[in-house]
Length: 187
Image (cartoon, rainbow, N blue to C red):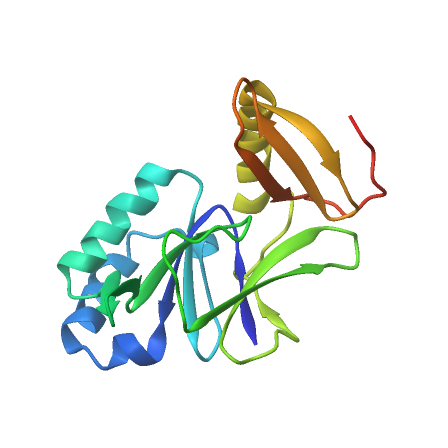
């Protein structure tokens, strides 16, 4: 299985977190502060989604203070610990050897980002209870991010699943997944 990634998401490796009683206690303390639509889980992962980066960072700080490890050093390389921060565009803040990110087209053409524990192949996805696209973090985050991209970047090309942007007055190129699968239009 896999979990839906939407907005700014904290993905927690349940097995790693369960090895830390302090981390489990921290999760139980903060869980009551979350909107039910922010949470989804499969047997391996717990996903907590946020529309705003600041909210995700504040919640992540609570989890870290409670004992979850955001980052660990392995052979001189910084990697994700018990949890990792991911956007619905599949962007990771740090290398995460236990997480696999993929994209899938839903029946209505909506493109979604899914996270699964490696080496699992995402066949089915866990969504928040009562999830609909119209009321989702996915939709709101996408609209906000696209307004930012249109203001600060030029769209240079696209394919049915992705759009590429180039920073106005710069060289930075960003590739983002579309919200809906469509035939490519070059702008």
